[in-house]
Image (cartoon, rainbow, N blue to C red; front, side, top):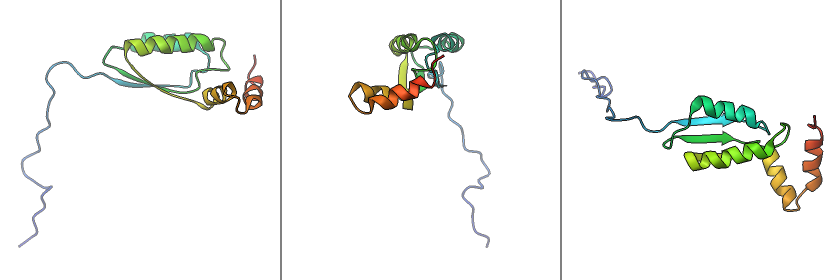
Length: 115
């Protein structure tokens, strides 16, 4: 007698279907270093809803012309949906400089990106 393979069932396994509206989306946005207009363009395109989770992948500051605008938009975004901000290396260096840890490292890093 041949062995029985439990995965080779003749009846397919039913896939549960969700009734009603779809749950919120999970959307990742990467590297937006000081580019508030680019961030705003992305947000306009995806139109975040209250049930959405937006994961931002660090480097919010430096390089671009409007780091404060990026931070302001992210704060506002966090009021409209679930925001999961992940710090980038530039953000971490700024926080360390603010705490008195390696202040010259951060200044040296941003001096290479001044336009």
